[in-house]
Image (cartoon, rainbow over all chains, first blue to last red; front, side):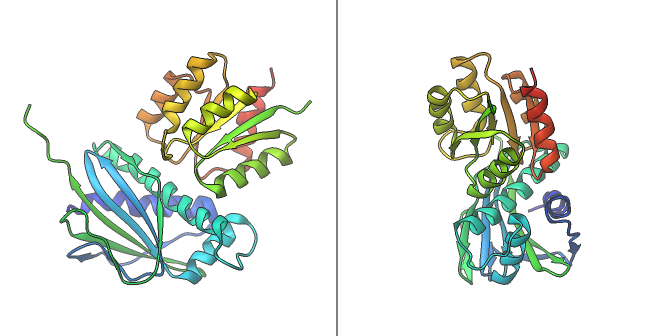
Length: 159
Length: 121
């Protein structure tokens, strides 16, 4: 897992949060995990396919998800209903979509799959045996937003 | 009479947001599709003046739906509205007949500007 795959996701998150809810995330220290694992309450899972492939999980607390969804919807989220879940899923889709543009400018053409939301803590996701890199982001006045990236270059078959 | 628009997006949030923007600006949202296949079917039955089309969706993606709609009606006005802003996607969509390409997250003004321009004629 190369660190260069992660930067497009961090940059995309900054762009999306700034445009979407006028919030400038502060990037924290990058760390590695032997496999994809999240201890967050709300997780958006997006698949990446193409010249690099794997998974990205955006994790956050319930409170953070409520705050982000409220800003996106433009009204307070009282219960995390279908509309709020859909807003949070779309946030993941937007960050992944922008990341795909960033990956393309590095020479990797990729597509993304529709997002899935997983609620519940201590979730371990194992699909490919690749370690995950994690970038924590602090959203001022909102909370922490964690970007977990687990990607590998697709093995090219000999022609 | 208000111009009739069909919204296509798998995310309920996006459909609600687009519907609010469009109805507040005097357009009528005649249908909402949550995937490409639904959009093609609704296009045929509703014959809207304009379609907004997401790309990343389950069942049938927006590029495939765009091509089917254009095959059914070469004069269809389809505006892509997606988070996938890569150049190759934009080029493929425009070549397939999309009239505009809006990258999410967007400002309401950007949507209205695109729709107004296309429906003015």
